[in-house]
Amino acid sequence: MRKRRRMEFPDTYIILIGLCLLAVILTIVLPAGQYDREERNGRTVVVAGTFHEVEEDHSISILNLPVEIHKGFIDGAEIIGFMLIMGGCMGIITKAGAINFFIQNSLARRVRGKEKIIIPLLMAIMAVGGFTFGMTVEGVAFVPAVITLCVALGYDALVGMAIVFIGGNAGYTAGIFNPFNVGVAQSIAELDAFSGSWYRWILLAVLLVVSSIGITRYAVRVKKDPTRSVVYGTGNTESWHTELDLSAKATSKEYMGLAAFVIGFGFLIWGASSQGWWFGQFSAVFFWIAVVTGAIYGYSLNQWAGYFVDGMKDMVSGAVAVGFAKAISVILADGVIIDTVVYYLAKPLEVLPGMITSAGMMVVQTIINLGVPSGSAQAAVTMPIVVPLSDLLGVSRQTAVFAFQCGDGISNCLIPTYTSMITYLAASRLQYKNWLKFAWKIVGAEWLAALLMTVIAAAIGY
Image 1 (spheres, rainbow, N blue to C red):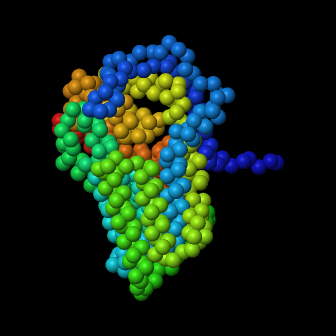
Image 2: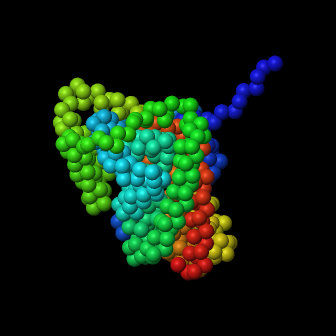
Image 3: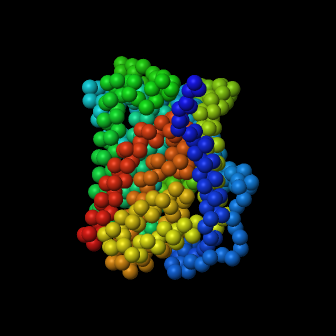
């Protein structure tokens, strides 16, 4: 008798190609349609109530799928280039070991015997970057050091990535002073900038508590029994393993290497928050940090280049995945169905009662986030439609913004089209299927908690 083949979870690329194929099918099934657009506060936004179908046929042939995927790589070139350059620079910085030394030895020495404290502590620190200057992909710089620390403490790489990524994303979602989600959405909704922050502070606390409990419980299980790790037997944990030497003293090179990183990252934060810097400038900052680090540690030119190439190798699979992920939004745009999807998803909200409408708004934003995983872009497409709808149904505009930020932010930790998550996975040497198996319950709990807070917001007239 032939053995039945066991069902396997599909590879990340298969998932992304499948989503590209689904997007192509949607361009054939759904009518092409558009809202009119106008300039408002320096941004191009849709005009509510102007949706109309487009007469021309914009459907995409399945035979042209490879062409659309190629366009996705072109559209994603900026972040792909950043990932490769940053990966090379992180290879040099990680090889030097200054960041690893201070995070591992200094922090581990202070929490010896109370290792569990590290998880909520580091998550809270990462959240600060998220809710202030909207830190997303920039946090990848901390991944190697935090994962190495977690593995040395008996945890695994999933715990390390979750601390940085889910912690930072909790801050990004809460968006207390985040210009990219709350800032844009409130501007479109004609609300005072960052008003209503008291409720967002509560959201931040809830997200951090829920996620840190879930991550800590998993970490404790893995420390007690390493075979319960989702990545047990894959070789991932072993690839990060180092021995902690708590008696080691920092040398002048470690202090200078740390100073180079801190000063460089400080410039990056300044540029991202006040100068409009993006991937090109981020790449430049990481590059010069790597140059200075190489000089401090006395690397020859060939050594520097070798470590740079080794670092890039870790990011190649993630960079390729970004191209496929970008292709999905390219297909939806070329098929002129993004506005169509938004229109038909928003229609059911018109007949829901107030409190349920707020929950519906969050659900709709979550679905839209799969195809438009950019907070500012999603706000420009959806908020001009949601705001008058919320006025009509008696839901406050502040609640509409709250539903948007929760629907947009939390799902970023799971959807394969979110390029920042792909970057984190590449830096962590993790497969999407293992991340999904680990994270879905934690992120699901966050999402349900935020949904409840969205309903409460409508009930109290937030």
